[in-house]
View 1 (cartoon, rainbow, N blue to C red):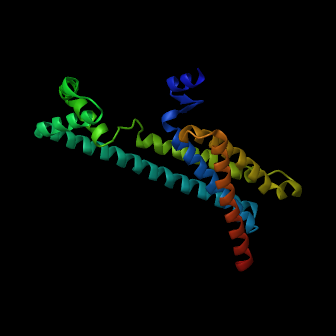
View 2: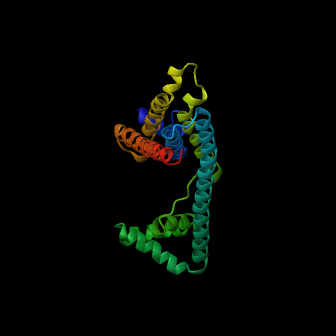
Length: 241
């Protein structure tokens, strides 16, 4: 019942299901990238202000870069779909018999035969739009997406900023006292792990994997990126500072 309601509403919690993939991958990239910067700065024993500056600069720049890339990727897919669609319209108008035969071969391969096959061909080729849509899907295996470049880019940027800011929270809202300041990286690790676990659970909806597997994979990648960044920062500090 609950699954049926999710499908009918088109949303998972407050997210539009059409854009959940953009939220997931934008969030994962944002959290891992920013946390890697924090870990690298921590490994190099840089100050709190430096961590915040590097983290925020990376957050904005990488978030914008990723959203722009997503925008052009989605737009390129839409342009390619429309270009092939216009070609199909031209072929229907100018190579009608050839296109009719292609429809016949497509449905013959699906098991249609005799009078039923001819009836299917007749119905499909009677409507040019249906005909072209069928050719796009069955011959070219292309389906028009309802996503828009602006919405995919916007969702990617928003999720990158929101989730990517989590590793910086402990540094931005730093408390008083040396004990608290000494544990900032630990707090950042905990907050980032929680954020990645939440986003990893959403990833399971996109990949249709077990939720525990999705969370584990996300945490593993985030931890690995942070570990590498930390040791690189530590090595560079010893070499140059």
